[in-house]
Image (tube, rainbow, N blue to C red; front, top):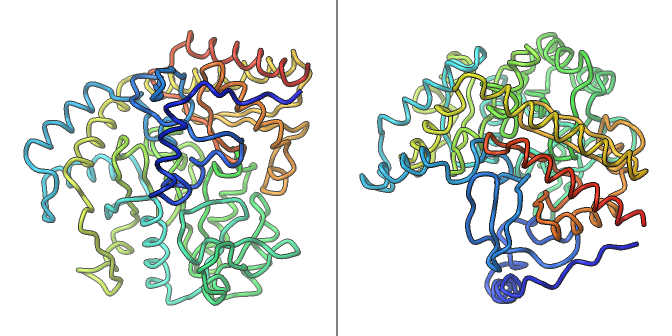
Amino acid sequence: MTTQFTNARPQSGKLHARACQVLVGGVNSPVRAFRAVGGEPVFIDHAEGPYIFDVDGTRYLDLVGSWGPAIVGHAHPAVIDAVQEAAKKGLSFGACCAAETELAEIIVGALPSVEMIRFVNSGTEATMSALRLARAATGRSRVLKFLGCYHGHVDSLLVAAGSGAATFGEPDSAGVPKAFAELTLLAPYNDLEAVDRILQEHSGDVAAIIVEPIAGNMGYVEPTDGFLEGLRSMCDRHGSLLIFDEVMTGFRTAWGGYQNVCNVRPHLTCLGKVIGGGMPVAAYGGSRKLMEQLSPLGPAYQAGTLSGNPLGMASGIATLGLCRADGFYESISDMAVSLAAGLEQAAADTGVPLQTASCGGMVGMAFSDRPVYNFADAQACDHDRFAQFFRAMLDRGVWLPPSGFEAMFVSSAHKPDSIHAIVDAARASLGQLTS
């Protein structure tokens, strides 16, 4: 049975029609268009705690959390107050402010691999700048990334693999010159043998390996034992830099990030999402020696008018202050574990093959009868079933990522009753799909 997307959101429909006249596809980020799940986009009016509310007045339990930043829930009073107080002093200075240093000190204190950082405005800026710094520091041109790992819309990283275990990249977007993509080498996630072959074949020309320590853009895929350790060892052996893209996992999977869980220290770290608490804040950082390669101290140039924006800094300081509370990460981890286990049990009860996993406040689910280790496994999952499940859950008041290639997020605002309600909705939705 195919679940039908309800037509009970007339205001969203009107706003979408209006938006399509002036916004490309009616959206400002493609996944919001609901193309992967069917139906029209839902327009949100406001959010509070674990809930978001659409313009038609429907309340949803939210497992997107603005794609990760809302780790303390939406519109937390302490965060809102901090931003409002900062706004009273001015929205942007284009000059130094004390809050930049304060937030930087918090981040550096949480990550042993980071001695200095540079704030930017988005994860894309962070990864783009980290790659530029890696190339400047090593004098090399090529970078290696993993199939299914998304690092923003940087030209040289929007590539897809050709045949074989690893190959030169081909552009995955119009407007990306083939020459840019050819500087990017590709390997399957969790495949150290492929990485080793690439580094040997291109010895002396790979500036960096960039990786999501937990992949969150092919669903949710954890590193296998020894994978991240092996990457660091290979980078050291070949003179390349290891870049952890912790835009998603940073301060989400643990205080600091996943590198504090796996105890693998990258040379450079990219951060975003949680460190801005919902404001457009990101950063990249590493050792003092590496970071001093940046202008104004070194030859690698990078700048940003709104970098270190006082409102974003205030939001980040307030959010991370809440994250430092005793038991914070244990609590959201418990909620994530409970959600993953509940979804898996609901699937088992209804005879639907489902894989789940979690780390900190990050959760994954995949409609598959086998574990997901890489992008090929993720592509083989039942995405049509996910689309049906998404629509059924939406009609039951649960807001999921509108793509089976995305992770889910819980916050400190999610409580046991929230998780129980989501699992109950999942059981009913799964039963509907199989009836």
